[in-house]
Length: 132
Image (cartoon, rainbow, N blue to C red; front, side):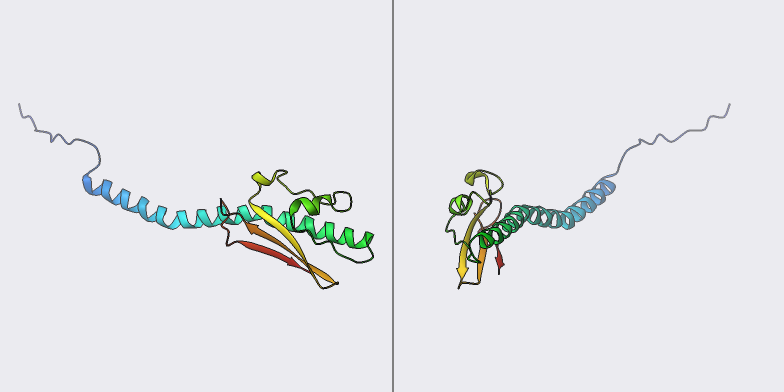
């Protein structure tokens, strides 16, 4: 009887295959992570842009009620209480907001509304402005 000796091979991954896989994952992560953090940072600016749009609408309403004069509020609370609470910031509490808001007058015909990052999730260097 002729018996052929069969080679027993264990199945699995070689060390080289595993190292190549890890290297590919590291490269993909190195490319994807900065893009992801950029998208997250941009999404946090949405609060500031939304509130500046609301401030702009409130300022125009205030000017319509006050012969074209704009309101200069040094704080969010001052702007919120102006002329019957024209604007309410979102989120409703100061502590929950990522930005601090201020409005300054530009002579008698305009204003600058500013949203400055508080330095938490949105860096203090992020400043959004609306000028009229």
